[in-house]
Length: 534
Image 1: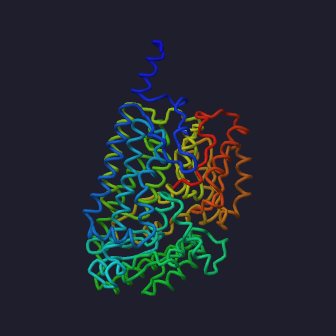
Image 2 (image 1 turned 90 degrees about the vertical axis):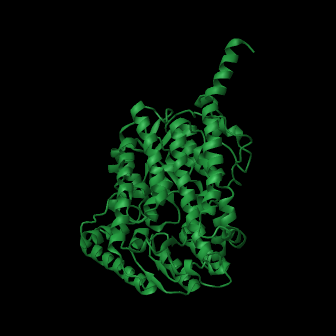
Image 3 (image 1 turned 180 degrees about the horizontal axis):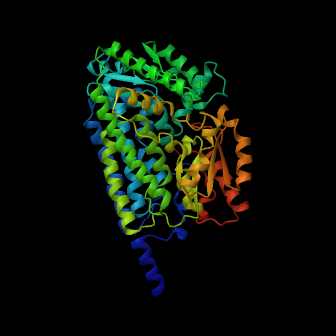
């Protein structure tokens, strides 16, 4: 080896290969997508990944279980519920998929977002197991009596008045939503289960999966009550009916209006929230606590104010250190679940990283060719497509629709103002505000596209969403009129069998070559078989 090649090899070893030479597709096993060997990111970042991401998160996952209400219940839960082991065991592979190719500050900040989601997930399923009558010979314990179950689309802030005495745990957040991202195969079993009892295959697969979990009796019985909603669409009403049938316990429904701009509708929603408070009081015997509500709302407002700071950096600089998938999943999880200590811990760490990036003018995604905004509902089984798109094509997803839904703080100066703002927040639920909340809200895309200085749109096309499907042609007309490059990404939310991950990549590849006339940054990522990947 001559001197120049030796020098290059040493440089690649120490710093990692430059983007165009990495060939990240070559290190993936065929079909499973597992690594043949670890990605070499240079000495510093490889050691960071091994010590501060792999080892640290495995240790923290064990620590989170040991610190929970009933640590041994975890092993019972793994044995009893299909989704636990299938989600818990491959969780670091979920990190790998989302963080592939990242270096430096972007690697660090994005990984902290994943850490928060893992901790929050363990907190929830461990509380489920500690209270679960199915794991305690049918007996109801103190944890059972002090846990509130609710639909994942009911905002956790509704239960802040009892935060000092009760824990709220969304029913489907872990068995359905988290599993879709970590292990896309698990949810398919539940979709097939509900169809096996006669449900047609055309309703929203999210609602099918949520109902299928009950068909398979894969839901812990951890609370004496259940609060539900009609969100995101009418299919959720049907799944709630099935859940009520299987659960067979006191239920309070909190329907959220679709046309939420009407002031009279907001008053109606406020009354629904007050009705939920009365329901919880009747079920628990514990009165509404205004001080607890204010305390937790102000803590949540603090999270929102930092989110605005992050958006400002993302919109106006090249120094934003969080990649598209970490930003999207963290934001929807945090804003929908509500206040928790882990969000503040992680935000403090991310703030230090982000301020360092701004101070040092660190360009965190140097291969960015296009700044994208992702709109409508994303494919849950391929949430890390944007990591692939950046590595392969330089498409940097700056922001997405779900992150922008709860764009508000909540006033705490009076009961009336607080209730009004809570009603507004509750109505701006996942997939409701922009996706099925009225055509003009769907078209907020143009405002946010300008705000975040984006030049391309990743337009999700949820094939089984009747509301969004009705807008397809209108968007096509608007894209042409405004001369906007938009890539339509078809999918079926959690069901990877309708449109595969490979098909999504092919669509993007075709657009970038035939319309944009660009060459890939990493040709090894153009085509690979990950059909069996988690």
